[in-house]
Amino acid sequence: MKPLHILLMLGTVVVWGFNFVASRVALEAFSPEQLAFCRAVLTLAILLPWWRPLVRISWQLLAAALAIGTGSFYLLYRAIAVTDSLTTVAIGTQLMPPLSAVLAFLFFREHISSRKWLGILIATLGAVYVAGGTESSVSLAALGLTLLSVLLYAVGSILIGKAKSVNLLNMLAWIAALSLLPLGLLAAASGPMFPDPGLVQARHWLAFLFTVVFSALIGQTVLFHLYRNYPVSEVAPWTLLVPLFAGISAIAVYGETLSASLLLGGAVVILGVWIQQSGGRAAKGAAPV
Image (cartoon, rainbow, N blue to C red; front, side):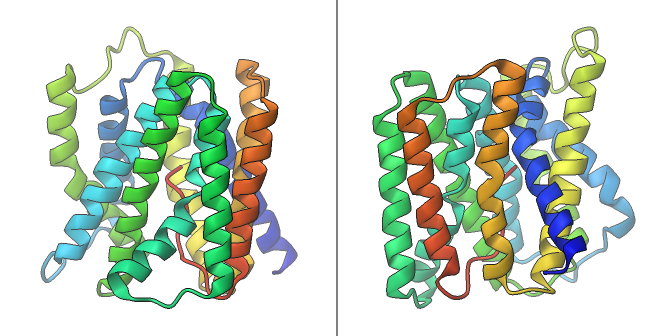
């Protein structure tokens, strides 16, 4: 990779790592339902210049919008809201590539090499170790929500990959648009659709803008631009640094402590994902951050 592209990818990884803290800050004023809904509204508003009509909305795009735009982000925000360890959530999101590979094998009969199976097994064992070493039932529940979020994101990513090619920004706009109704209903069912303006301070708005503009839109655009110019196996391993920066930012902002079992289990997960990602062509996409 060119030095400029390395800097872009490294900057994206740092942003994604800090995004866990930014999301928690935003969740001080937003409920998970409100944050997911407002995220879709702002995303669509920003992408309106690139939003183009489609001849027809395929079932793959509709399912991807429900999986990614509705379910995945809502569950991730719910996990961040309840956890007492942001690093645990960050480690859980790293299971997206192995889950994508398994789903592609089960439903599309894509070939998985023995090296990839080894990586998937190691990553799974690491996740089990993290779960077993988690003393807090709250963090364990958050890890479960994170895995469900990652599973939905993996399903949506595969469906988009199998669907007819759509411009990236147009696709993101359609995912946001198709998510508005279910997220709006979810937010309305849980209470007010928007947070109380009197409770939202400047730092909450800044955190919200950070999660949407820098983490989601700019981060995903950089990632997919690099995917088009380099082999996936050369780009994807950089995302393994996300838990590192998530842990650093959680320690700096919230004073979190990292247990030995969390560090060891996280290292095993990252090792497994690295083996799986380096074993030939890797699954495209990044975790929902």
